[in-house]
Length: 374
Image 1: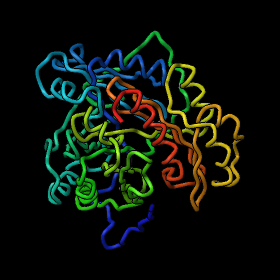
Image 2 (image 1 turned 90 degrees about the horizontal axis):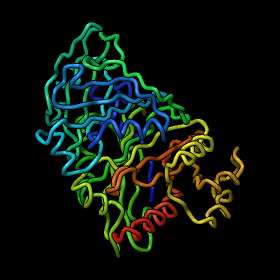
Image 3 (image 1 turned 90 degrees about the vertical axis):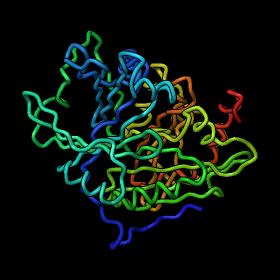
Image 4 (image 1 turned 135 degrees about the vertical axis):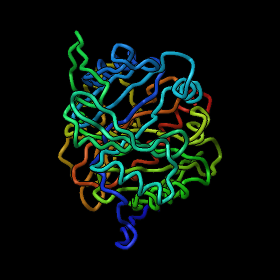
């Protein structure tokens, strides 16, 4: 069953302060076309560019932003190097979940002292707008955490990026900030990575779900949610559990060729408006049977929203002791059934929709069956 774990004051202490998510970087096959998709369908502004025209010879990157959500889409300019190898192995996917900190050198030193594996030591990138200090440590699979200090920088984003102008006007859909990012790891590895976030970064186990709660007739998984002290960074970590057939985590691991970021949850203040806009632009969402809505209010209690629009759009509802939340999940946003998105609106709830797990995972299994992967 789900359990809420209160942090031990002696153990749950951030190794270094994290102000929030600085950016999420994707390594993709065609960054220009991916940027066009996120602009047209999701309403992100394409704010900046880095590539050959700005002096970078091996890659092209586009900075996208909506609210406090910042995505960087990066493609290689040839078949050589780690970006091309990453895409060949994983397809389009998340490479970097970057932390915004006040002192990158101190944060990196403390993480390494606590057992983190270095990706690169602190380096100073400069331009006419100042300097940014960036270091990086490894996490599950080929995913990394950059550690970004920008207190001495007044530029748009990072040195090397230049403002990007587009003839296309973006139309935002109301996305506010990254609520949480979910990682899928191999069977037996969840507790190892829970230990990593606890030991190296001082995160605590906010919630735990076992295979009795997250299960259907055919498949199951286990999950633990790790959070930093101020709650701005939350990383649920999933692993598969034994079942009659292949779980969604197994399918992800097969197609991604290893552990990685499964989905990114982005917050909105008006989920009905946001989802309507996204659907009108072609974003596809998972759907649950309409019978779900016959009893949902009996389970969650009174809510502010009318049930009709929620049922029409397929938005799920769950509650905890502090309020309720509304959530919906997209289908994978690339041909490999790997990365997808969650849209979430919190009305006080601090949980993650445990009451919706069965309906949600049955919906995912229907998609798996269509792909021949259940």
